[in-house]
Amino acid sequence: MSPAFHTHLGEFHTTRWSVVVGAQGHSPAQVNASVESLYRQYLSPLYAYVRRRGYSPHDAQDLTHDFFSRLLEKGWLSSAHQDRGRLRTFLLVAMKRFLANEWDRTRADKRGGGSRLVSLQSEEGERLFSADDAAGSSVPDELLFDRNWAMVLMRTTLDHLRREYERSTRPNDFDVLKSCLTAERGDIDYPAIARELQLLPASARSLVHRFRRRFREIFREEVAGTVSSPEEVEDEMRALISTLGRQ
Image (cartoon, rainbow, N blue to C red; front, side, top):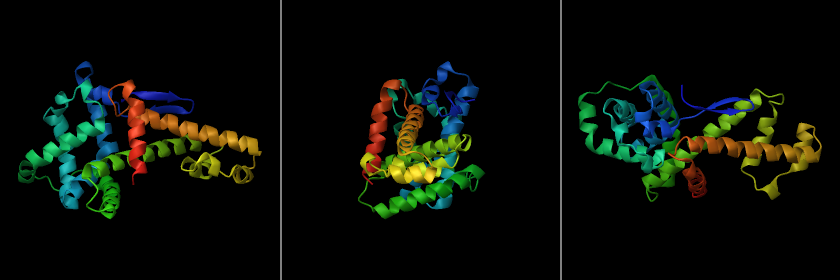
């Protein structure tokens, strides 16, 4: 099982990049579980990147599936070290190398369509690719990959926060409060929120504050799972948020 963060409403499971880069200090089962988690969560940004390089949906499915298979089968993780830093950087560099050196071999030994998971995740990847395509050819592929990475982290964070509220005593609050995440503090209509949630304005203000703070906590935990040391977390958070701001 991959490592977990404990919260007041349960356990928060996240990919630990530190497990991958420190593979020699962990059991094969721990490393495989971490790579499986990488595969599930970060497949769609890589799929969208491959699509933007000119590959068809079918070929992009095969490529992303084979890429993650080779991470394990070919021992590519042994080249990952603590000083490599960010997971997104390692995966993008590894994918570029894979596309340059392994594509001919992949086509020669094609399995046809990849896994069911690739097919499902490629739906999200196609949505990311469509957004990339709308940005035009002037935006570097690497910047679009970073933006998609940030969007996946944000989506994962929001999904986790939604699940927390579903398990709480006020599950319907989430749909009312989620719009506050993108609003400036001065633009939040606290009286309207108070009326909708049947709270006093002061209570609504406090609830919004806790909601935003919890979102940031979960986002930080997600980001912590994609860097190799705690010291990198804040810098990575700022970099990803800045990337989203450049859309």
